[in-house]
Length: 305
Length: 308
Image (cartoon, rainbow over all chains, first blue to last red; front, side, top):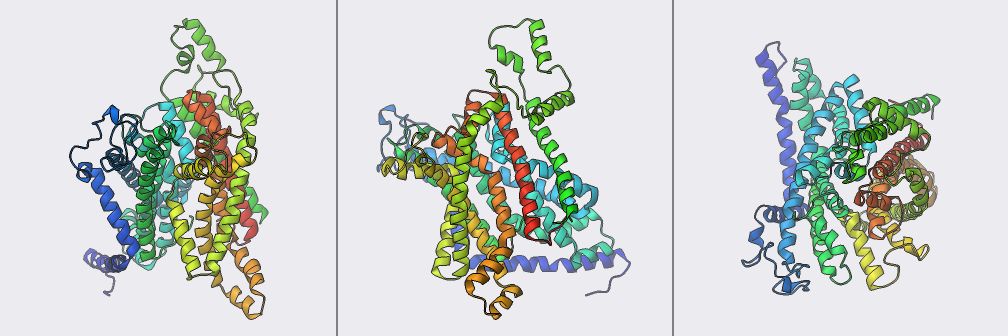
């Protein structure tokens, strides 16, 4: 290791050198993940769901269209022509359920990425700068933490009386951000004391730079694991809100909506309830498995902040 | 638990409590639409009537004043009135016993099942029993409340007729499936997290010392391992308690129990704003206090915990 010098070049050189271990950590993780069956299953499942979300028509033979319904085919049980049966309006249920994937994927990805941005910004600032910044952010997080996501979302969505994928997702973010923010905050606080962070600070790197280049990249592991769980939670949240009548509305295609409609003819046509529920569980399961396998590979503990 | 900790924790309660109430209240304040015109329906109201109704509900006052009026009401147990003139507190009082029974049952299931799973899995670590528990709880973890409620309702209610499908006319039998729905799902997470909390403690030196002293295994587990694993377990448990209301909204709707969660959904469907606000406000305040209780319990269990 080169001796720290007072020149800028020396400092930059040292900073680069210190960053090397990040790459080894990730290649280690990747090597572990490649051998992990849990991870393989999760990736295959997520790939299939991604495919269904981007190009749903690839998943069924032509002639089937979620918008083409024949009233005379109403409520048929699953058969070779209609794998998942038909719904009340005689639409092919399999195509409807497959089309529902896009909604869930959109909600999951919007919620996960928005939550991650907020958590990294606020949690990073609170943990790194401490003091009044930490106090302000943490108390606001405490307040939002006390309003349960589902209940707060119900209130907000029912008051504003609008529904759409983006709105439902943003409402879920609005109430859901404190958990991950707390996690980032505690990760940053424990990462702040490490040697390479101290040395970057000593070399005169600005607070922002230290946070972005050194503290966050090395503390990102638990955040990634948590993000995978957030996707699952957001998808369940959207389905629950839609089921309760405050989320998406017709003509949107959503598993929550399908479950809500199926509920009324539950004993006559249980398959209408079964298939969207199954997809919902598999979708959440795929992301939970992904989170679990990354967690195992990184060996992180998701302790409460 | 030091008195200093207790005092600081109680002082910290005040801003959070005010903040939570302000958050919920401001959502209502900022929502579009005029409550008075909504109340009047299609009939046009003379301006003077509108003004007098507004004045009687303090709607002509600025936000802060309105909030203070609301706050004053809440401290007297008054969570406002529904549009049909019933007080929200009355509805809460009437519906509360149902939700309380649901909560009690769900927690009984969570504690018994969750702790059993956690202890058995930790004791039988790396055996097929442990892996079965891990896989089962992982699968349960991926099932949303919404789906599990329907699965139980279909299998045990509609197909097997063991328990009533919905309603509360069959006494405690009506509560079995809703309690299982919430309880089993919370037990799955309690089991997983409890297991790792116990395993973290099993490697501790005090456990080795206890074993070396020749204490019976039962005593080592009960007195040394479990007691030290209590903090994370109580924390999970407290958070589950806090989020029970969210679970109650779904299970009470699906099993048609006339509890608080059901009242909330009816409130949404009938566009009964004050009722929805009152219930969300009440559950949030309840959560503030349950977090306080959890923190105080943790400080009592583990004397090392202190404020910063």
